[in-house]
Length: 126
Length: 367
Image (cartoon, rainbow over all chains, first blue to last red; front, top):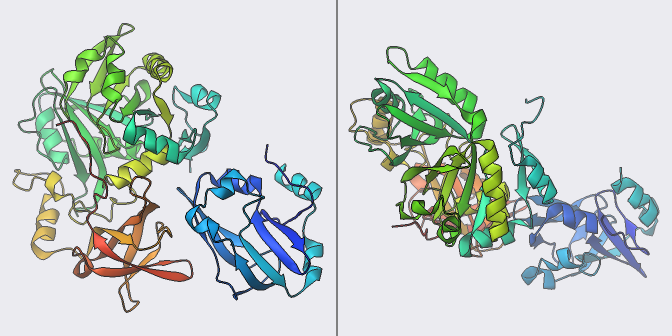
């Protein structure tokens, strides 16, 4: 049973968002990491890159497959989790601790269309 | 498309072990149990076992059996002795590949066992029947009554010897086999595999396969899924039909000419291969390594330094045993020489690399 952390927002494509002022901290859900299996590589954007809501900003690679990452919000990448370059398996270990990017949001109202933990639970249990 | 998936005799055990199951070649097969990396490393450093019961077993017998097998098979069974095995292909007249397979020479005169890929059983059987006109042979597709377990890894002989009925098979050399008896059934043990490690493949009726699986499991052999079967064979430079061999990819293109005996009197596809050897082929299968951890996947484009397309990746991984990103790719023959600089396009970026030998991992077969 995949763990769904309270206090976060979720996208239908299994990213989570933690809101910190005007910055969205983005990672993937426990459901996403368990579906992927052993994650061996994280393809991340560079600091300063613009990302659009629903656009891919990178990918997770497992041994067997790659899975694109979609940004739940629009804005500018202000940080990437460099620890994941040498230790991508941190996402498997704790997907809610291993954030991937931080985005300075250009439109906070986009948060309104994201899923609450309970709504996300309903989606993954479908 | 298959309406209903077939299952192997070990299906219940896979589900009980919590394997992640997925359709493969019309069968519901285990892709992984504990994880691909863990299973891969078990085979490289200890021992793992695979349910490969989906593979096809086709027996060819009759007065013309040897002549017939030589007619449809690229390797030469002319002098193949009882207890020995050869790898090779069946070809279309244009040199395209019907399948790659193992041929076992049984002790009975004029009896051969052909072990073929699961996805190709029906096609291969039909192909053999179709090309058997004029040969006094009987072709028996026994795939549904045989199961198969592959025990692979440096400790596989030790585990085999833990089962008294199988221990005489420890004396087998690579690509040799013998019969044994277990639970009153006749079984086949061969020193073969698809991992680059020493190991054994055991063919037996379903109830014996289930018994063997339980014995190996209790002895500590790690159950391994098709996920790591692919990463292991890939590192060892071994082709997978559908990726590196196909109706469009001949053994000459795939770099497997050593298994095609062109000095043999005749076989289907021989003239086409001779022509390919003489005139060259447009594309060749190569190994490529890139200087990044990004993973080249099947279908990604291979480019030259100027960004022009040279070909396509057929299989690629971040190699578990070597910790670098490598792939097989079919590229223009002019760019197939070792050391040729190339780039691979992965999503929005290109990654520089070079052509290297296809055997990425030093294999450890029984000498």
